Length: 520
Image (cartoon, rainbow, N blue to C red; front, top):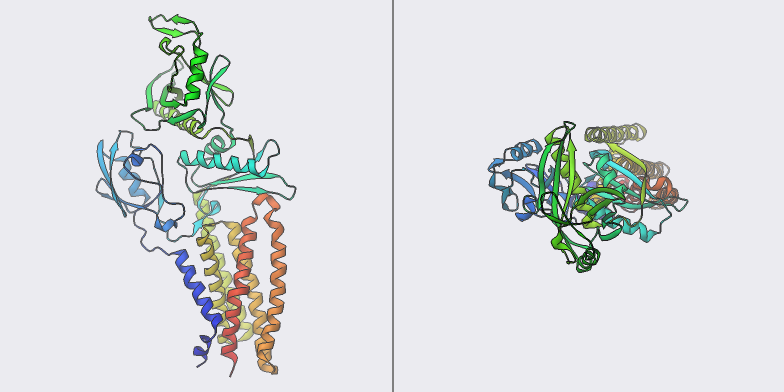
């Protein structure tokens, strides 16, 4: 009868509904076969075959999974890497859980696909738990909130074009009113982060001192990234110092205004004849990146005074071996293409803090956090049992702690919040306050049973103390939203969410359970 009495309270049913919705948001995934598709590079052979980037609004368990490559089963990342290395020249098939694609291998074995292990739930792991790079950027000159927003928009474009996924870019500030940009990228090296988010990336093409065009959509309408057709490595060779050098080249299209500017600048240039007999203009087209000359091109005499819309961009790559030179050329090409597509940062930024966490260390953090959390719950349950010596009190307390954890994780999955060590600390802190609250309620109920009196009034008195402590906790967390330039935001937000879930959902349900169990 007492067990049935528990379910007569709407507070208990409200808790059950919240738990059900939280489990739906977390969406546990028991089928982890294959690899999860994280991103597709623009212009890659995968993109040309019709493969698309995952919808950022969907849960990560809904992402497309690669199951086969050229009839080879893919069960994990190791199978995927092995299959990619052995894909044949010409056409081959990639089968996913949603479709089957026909790809054309250009002999580079570069599919343009970023993958990861299939996630077991919609919970997103932050940098501390999955490894990557975190960088704090500060404008060299004081910037407004709108200027910071413009910087973040360009950074998003750069990182998406470059094929990096699982990234977080957000504005943060401190108590002194300084604005920063916090960037967290999984699977990126510190060198890549410095190149892509810290450098302003001003690209200029000049003839003498006259600027013909700049990087960005204003002057450039198209940048070819399709390897093997209008983009790629043109030639490699050994240098006099016994190293190797390669050159990349790709086509771009200029806007009508930039083409007219080219015609105006070249119409009065003299024509020279080279030793091979070809005719070129007296001045070269010089490429500058952040004020540094990176390459020079001779201009054919046929382009004198003409509105040239199609330009061939070239650049070098060097290394001790030919493979290293090719990779350096590819990296330089990708960086330059990215800047030409997205343009320069509207505000110059400087790195004030850069941290790197290895994936292995992140996995160790996660395992330790789970172990410590489990031990903490067991310790709390043991102390409660020793104090009250009543199983019927201990069981609702256990249900209360587990329910609060599930609902907080459900909120994190629903709002696509990355769980890091700060967030885990917030969860532990909120559950710790929950233990205090249930002890207060239990004491009032048990003392009321011994001393007599109105049980309902005693529970109300307990909730007055709980609400007062809740208000103080929230007020104490608010300054942490600014302190540390945003690095403590996760702790503050998760703590506020956790204590709010406890006060308005789990604690009322706990009081209803205890009341039903203790009443005769």
